[in-house]
Image 1 (cartoon, helix red, strand yellow):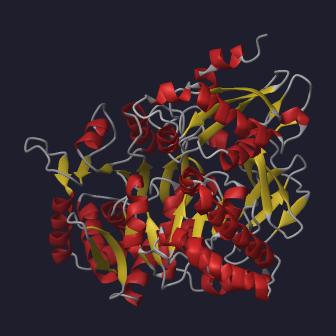
Image 2 (cartoon, one colour; image 1 turned 180 degrees about the horizontal axis):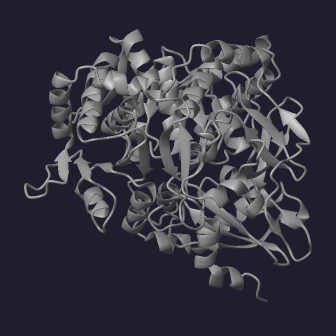
Image 3 (cartoon, rainbow, N blue to C red; image 1 turned 180 degrees about the vertical axis):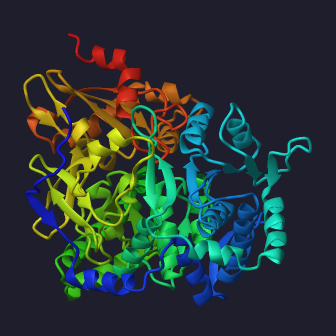
Length: 624
């Protein structure tokens, strides 16, 4: 059966009028392309800091917008010297680093299009993406990424290596420095080449091909235009999530649309960004960098929450009581402020004491200057968001798809409705279909799937609505609450529907030891679950339980761990309806990882893959 070509929405939500007016003012003078947006930024604030990165000696090295423009212009000219034509694809396979940004902006200014490749992508998928995209050139981080790109014949003509030196006998590979030198010499003969190439780019031209990591099947190439990224940057600026004075901390994969929209936002606002892809260094780096703004996947916030809770519980006694009192006071102040009220005299005094004793110390872990966090790519627990707000840190949860250039909804600073993803971005239309599916129409929506017209027709209607595949509801305040993925809804043999995502998100708030919960029950007579533990939380718990030296599997399989998880499960079930309670569960003896194919690179659960891998375990939960 083919999908409907038009849809009649049953409910709608929109941005606030002043936000729409602010965007309209910005769009009236919008540049035609992302490259033009970058050049405008560099011209407007040439001497201001653009980026900083680890200098290899324990410090951080900063660069200005003018310095960034010089590098980008040389690299763009180098690509033109190699013969890059409009919309020619240039693949980038690298972790998040300044060279990734330089390469991407160079492609934008030269009029090409970037094909993004996660550095963890297996060789077979790398070859598929290169050939499916028809990429002519590729920028690869190191010898490992180079080997994957050369593992089989592709459309590539040249490969540019960021780290290391190419083999002398391979003329297909050149270093990034060599490409810049080539561009510098090209500019000597053609000084206006990059300016002309950037000016020729039209808004509707292809800017980025992002291959969805997907929870099933082959990745699909999502075609996103320059107009989409310019819109995302200006819309974020219009709602004032970021300001020119901000210092962002950037670690998210730039191969993901969430990371890319952060770059667009930075170009639109002009704030600086510190860059380090090493997730293990985030907590150590934040007190040094002292950013004011950071975006992350929910797992980062869950880990911080779990780490703080576990550490204070292990101390017990007076410290635990003071901590719980302080957070309780913070939570009461949070509830007042969510209602638009300030605390009374007594509560304000209590809050000052609580802040000095506990809350400020928690904020200091993040550098002490954070004004907002932004959470996206998966659902954030309402409990976790409320806990952060109680300690004085606001997490703005947002929502979007690769197919919508990431930014579709986000909570607004100082006006978060926890448990929702906020209002739509100005300029984007949002509606609900009769079955609750979220529909999106606007400048951020993709051009279509690359080389997949039938798949495009299934998700994009003739009147411009994109079917997100997510189910949601609109709150009285005009915010959107995501309830689950349509394809993930479970129907038990008794005919009851269960939304697993909401249950899984709640469990991670009540159980600091859990990294993931995989709710199962399609066609079964009751609901069960797999529990995946967090390695860091398990190590801390094991030390307190006298299990140092035991393997992860031994700790996960211990009677003591079983009893602890059972207690958490009872807390979870107390929140649920009888038809959705977890009747039985099993603890997995290893963490779920991207490398093993359990999670997507953006840390979403590959539900079907995990269920299939542990089918024997799940079947056993229904015997007897």
